[in-house]
Length: 234
Image 1: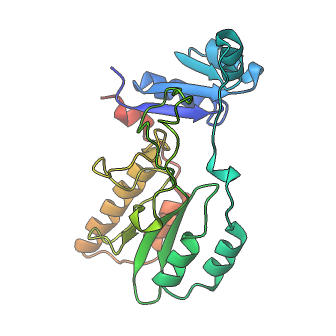
Image 2: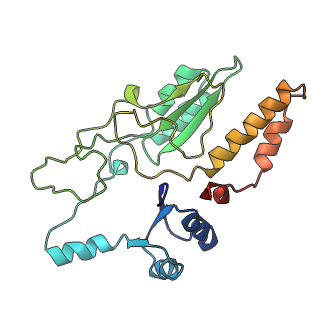
Image 3: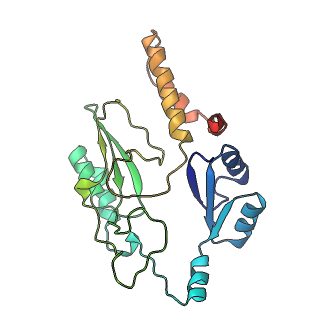
């Protein structure tokens, strides 16, 4: 049984060899693309679920029902001012004010200052979906499933001086399932963040055993190329 579901936008993104490793490690891989040649390669490689974004157009023709899609990037936002404020930020409040202006494309932004404070915020707008976490096409005639605005900035998840003493973000969810609002069904594979956490624990143990602490562990983390996907098979 597959342990986790993974969605790949463009099956060539990670390479067919990597995807074969993911499938062998019992991950449920779903591939999406609009390029017929890449989709053909994905099917030849044995992807169990391969979808073409253009299938929505085909579905609309077959059913005779129009299909509408909404994207937050179609609404007014001000990323230019957000980046300007980010470059001028002098503290966490300034950093947060910049984040409040940003909408698309969604970004993970980390923060650190000279006082030793660290933080993370998503620079993004999250719609309030009446359909919840459903990935299915929802009927739109009644308006029942229309977006109900955006989640207020103050209610977005964030981290500031977490008790762990560090923040690990590699496009993985940095909040747990208790968060009440649906944000996304697809996250980056956990291998990178898992490896960083293992390396941090090793460096922490080295320091507790009397080893020197400095820039060395961070340098090794930046150059590390270990891939842990095969370790998750068992």
